Image (cartoon, rainbow, N blue to C red; front, side, top):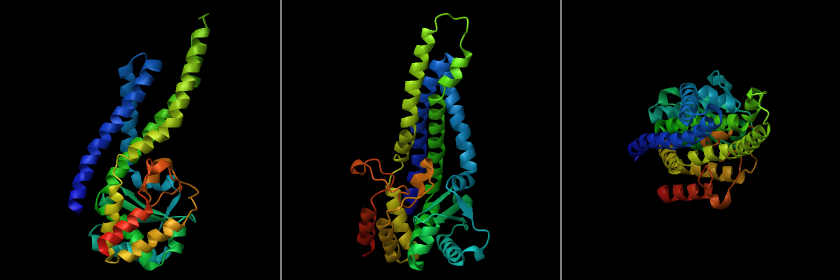
Length: 303
């Protein structure tokens, strides 16, 4: 089952690239049409920006994601002995290198894993989760995150996060582009009415892109099947051989309604539970499967 998921994640990587290419090509076409007088030049520009973003994020994913979410790395075992020992033990059982360990100073209970592969991985927990959970519950949550590392879910998430960030950045550039274009207009041109129209069009279209940019990024995040969360739950329970620990932890996460104070939009899907505590219509656009469903699935599998 685990190896099948790894194979599926590899295929999803290609799917994500295809989806993002289509979106970026659309954004690039707009850039080319309005600023470069050549659609293909715009497409190439957008793809180059995305490629740079992706490469930087892919090879520096841990430091970038941790910085975006305000996480601080544990320097030694003495900083949080219980947390360190649990991650160390679970890593040995999962047969992966010990990930870097981070803590986020936030009362809302949550956790996530990131990195490009098990050799370059990291896990983070909030101070709220560390204080709220007892040892077996903390083991359950961390086993879930270690499973994401072992199953290579983190690689798919990293690529998705990088390209989502690129889309948001390009959308932001388009949204503010009219400020750059107007200073370069021909002052000898007596027909200023054309520039008024251009400015209006750029402002309206730019505003639309700024609004839907994060939404597009969220939709592409949903292209990564939410089944990976169910599998990480099951895999985590198998690592600890104590499904009740994770079940109890998910029950506590369900009871918590306090959103995190600082969360980067592009990395919100990495967390074990929605860090913003927002639920959309019918759950259609939720980045996480319902906790009730996950609890039910764990009970169905192990009890």
